[in-house]
Length: 182
View (cartoon, rainbow, N blue to C red):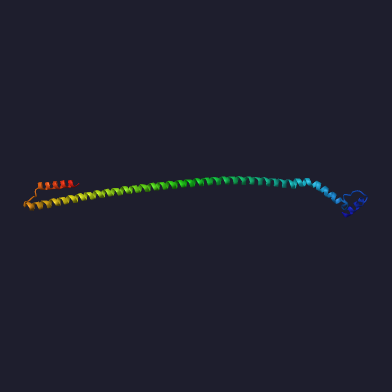
């Protein structure tokens, strides 16, 4: 192959451009020809798919950014809703506590009033029982005084004053004196 190139080499000495002579710029010429021929092929075979892949990647990135922004907005909305629900729950709990406290205070007041009423009823019952016992004691004392008075009068009169009329008269006299003292 070098022999055939050597035969072509003397043509370039004549002063014209020889594209086969690599020393005189033939190398550059063929490089440019190959480049011009291969650019459309490279563009179609290599650059087209790479460009499409980059564009698809950019589109997916944009979609991911949009989805992230939507998710962020949804998260902020959910947080706001949660904070609103939390504040409503706190307000509701405070209201329930206040109502329970009010009911407890009312129930306590009712219990105090019921205890006071029960104590007053017990005190009234005790006072009535004391009065009844007092009245019984006074009646017993009166009967005893009447008996003693009748015995004393019997001894003074030296006669038996045991009749029912005498006792009735003595009881009336004592009752009259009692009414006069009041």
